[in-house]
Length: 155
Image (cartoon, rainbow, N blue to C red; front, side, top):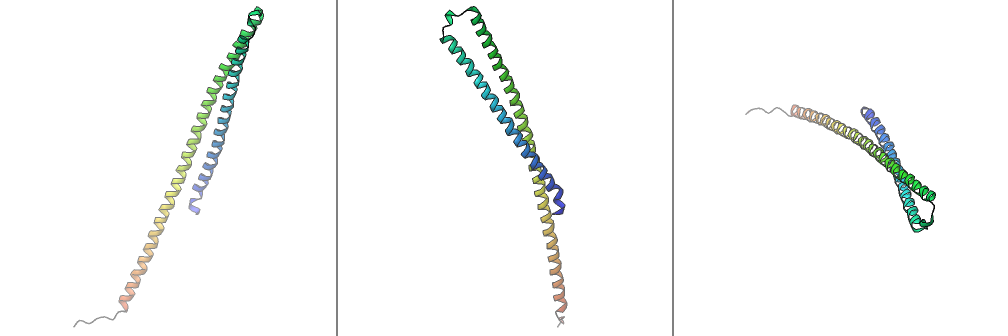
């Protein structure tokens, strides 16, 4: 109906916005999963490297080589800590994206509820109008029927 065009347009826009935000939320989730995978790889690599170092011939190595190994492991642990920071940041971004998506969903549901209630109010209004027309028609018919009946004379 013409009177609901603006509201239907708002619903269309809110639906698009919600869908866009859902795609952004899904993308943020994929990025977070990827970052967690990278963290897992870094941790596995650090564990494997330590296991090889300990299981190898670490006794006969030079001081320089041992120093190099400790520096490498320190940098690897720094990379792991940085990845934890990246993950924490991505988790905040995901939470914000989910919140925006939820707000968009609430907005869309609100518009849909307003449209539903306005349509229901219009139907009630139309039903009342039709009832008035029916009542008026019945009243006219009754008046005509009474006018056509012969007047009874009192005895």
